Image 1 (tube, rainbow, N blue to C red):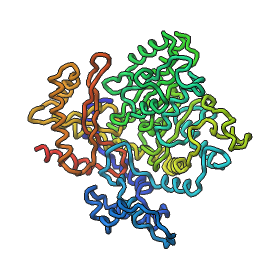
Image 2: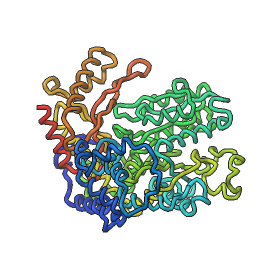
Image 3: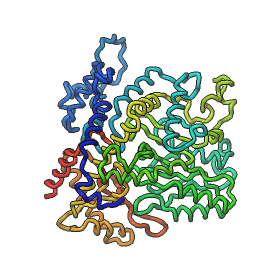
Length: 567
């Protein structure tokens, strides 16, 4: 990504053609319009949406809600189930409606704290349809045609990413963490088949490989599986752009293979939560195959990609970047093209995580694990004698014997199908491009301030990470940041970095929620590596532009207020 485009004001404008399409998509799919989506005519839904559309600051919401203080007291103090039945009267329960309205307000245009956003109207409609039907996807007799709806969505994603829809498979599960858990399990059960009965490490030594920049579930899942985190896990270094270091990966694979240590799984990431770093899959795929041939490794490490955040960029895989039919601005168009070049490599993964509940605008929970070769599910199958509850001739028609769950709800599936059906590629492209144009506009304005460091702006995702320095002490943020990167080698620089962090943290905590509601994170970057691969975290601030309601005026308000606070 050419950073000169981020500094160019003209390259970051919103074209009238794009804005017209965005307005149409937002009006049709995010506006909670009861004429388009009659479910919102329900009195409870209507009252909920009416209150949320006030877009109040978090500290003002309780006082603005009718009888809010009284309802909060009831919510916090009631502890007994009612003795008598309550006849329905067509009106919502007041405490239930209060709890819903006072939940985190992702519809607020200022909400850009994390990789969470408001669901779209068609996905809410679909999820409610799935809730009403109440199928259990774990077993065909309990699922009915919902089982085929799941296969339909799996085929759609397979076609988009480049999997063979006849040879691949997938299943909806309980969040991205479970998807990544399936990725680890697929690798373990293929490389260490005896582990299913005898436990890990029974017959052969092994190591699990993942990136230091990966989501925390990449480690908590291993703990859940009983993996010795300190002895059986190798965390691969990352580059300055926070993607996986291929040289360090090769060294680690060679070290394992040279002593006959199995590597069941290599966990990659496409779109890290904080900086949207994207690991290249094809170089890892090619490296794995080459080293397996060199060392005579018969069962290749399973490559799973945690694409929970970045997966939706696959909607641009077949976008005509030369013609640019959506009239995306130059800066963002180039950024999307650079990301999509990497996303095209997702087809080389053995499995990957799709979180519709994030940048797919589907309500919680809606997560899909995609598996390139459906035969891999055989490695997960448990003893058929354990499934005496079910008829023998129906057990093989679903993933019953291979799934972690005994119950798989379908509301996430129905929501995902409905979102894909109504939004289509064009609708998703418009919303994603709107978010990325916002992110680049934020980067553009931050780059104008010499005392603010924007971290890895070339990653071109929705996450904008930055570090604010005291302009009386720091006149060049880039130089100060590079100095901080060396802090692991110099205690005095470590102390200086802590002082810089204290300055930024004080501003973050005391400026109030104006324009944007951002988030503080303990690691927007890592220092350079010291001995034995150790490093330190560099804290900072994060804004994640996944909210389709956020406009440039909200960014301007936030940044203008920041100038006032710092003056």
